[in-house]
Image 1 (cartoon, rainbow, N blue to C red):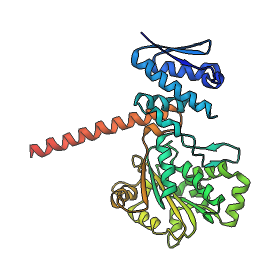
Image 2 (cartoon, helix red, strand yellow):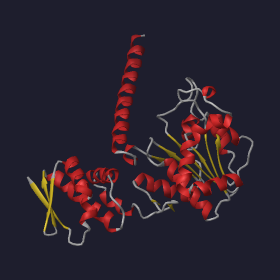
Image 3 (tube, helix red, strand yellow):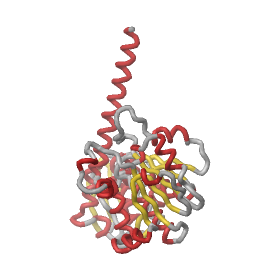
Image 4 (cartoon, rainbow, N blue to C red):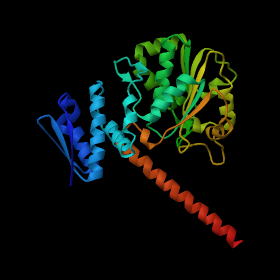
Length: 332
């Protein structure tokens, strides 16, 4: 049994421990240690490796609280992962890159190292691809950067689009005209903008034509100057659609392309424009690719575990398929 200690004299213990000690209990549960605090000294008991990881984790949590940021379940889980990998010191720069304050006063900052790199890439490049699983903040952060650029008058309009690809449901069976039919596909984008700038401001900007949320098909034949353009769910574009979108970019514009190549809803036999773009554009200047993993998921921690389970399943299935093909070729 090992013991580690931390001096917490100058620490806001209420913020560190959380309501009903939920933050410290999470550390205890995930690392199998026991944490107690007496006379401003925090003691950690457990295995040698576990107590060392817990000390690194809690030290990083103290830094988070000290700079005025709030702890949450996902953030603590991420901190533990980084501490296990010996990368906890890299977390010190997180949260220092606030890119926008929402209409309700919520600061939007990087929560993972992957997000931090993504924000940097959007600042430094004209075109950025954000590729990774659901819940990693790809679209949300892109919308925040777009609104920031618009507010600073770096661009004169925001255009957000996504392909209206059927994922099990048929568009023809949805009620209403074409706009009503595609609105469900665009709803996540509307919601992000509502949160950023508020419903009233959003409606005013839409009426003036300076904010546009539309299906990808509406982009054909246009040249988009002085605009911040976001293509969401890009894994569901065809190669032709992807090329069409990327060649819409005009002077003074930036483009962000987001997608998850593990969730392609295209019909059988159709190639993904995002997968081809990764191969074709790898060496193009002023264009960056940012890849997210399950570690960057900022939704409920269960989402991380679900993504990991699917990744393991897909890896095992692909291995079995390669093995079967090898056996078939040998039998011939």
